[in-house]
Amino acid sequence: MDKEENIDVIIKHVLDGDTDAFELIVKRYEKKVYNLALRYLKNPDDALDVSQDVFIQVYQNLSGFRGDAQFSTWIYRVTYNKCVDMLRKTQKIRRNVVMSTDDENFFETRDGSASIEESYEGRETLLAVMKIIDALPDEQRDVVMLRYIKDLSYAQIAEVMDIAEGTVKSRLNRARIKIKEQMKDSGTKAAARPS
Image (cartoon, rainbow, N blue to C red):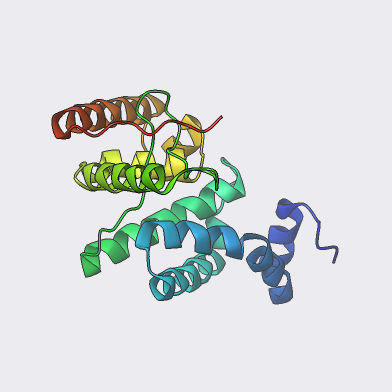
């Protein structure tokens, strides 16, 4: 079987009993699943555990994939749900998300030309914003993660979280407003986006 085969063909092979075909799915998505889990959980061991659980669940429920959404969206949703479950169980809510509230773009680390003082100020700003985002309600923090970390579209976020697209937009808007207010109250300045 060709490694570049269409995912629908691979799924059909798996459902027809070709368990080796599932390895192609794992190889295609394992890094993306692991990276998403790592960004949520901030712990490599937890991310690995979740990744394994994701592929077990995907294998067991592959016949339930209806194709209404892209397969990648479906696997992101399974990963998201597994991460949320782990966070609830372990109470390890440690997010590392930073974004520029002015233009919806992430803060970016400065390039090597930044002075030590600028690097320090940038790091302090990032830490302050991370704390602000940590304090957001779960549903707002989750849409921020999916939008700015995974760069999913509003429609994809709606699919992953099983909510309306309008709800995604309103949660992001409320999150941005809260972040701006908290930054203003704390005197934190938005980091300039490098050109």
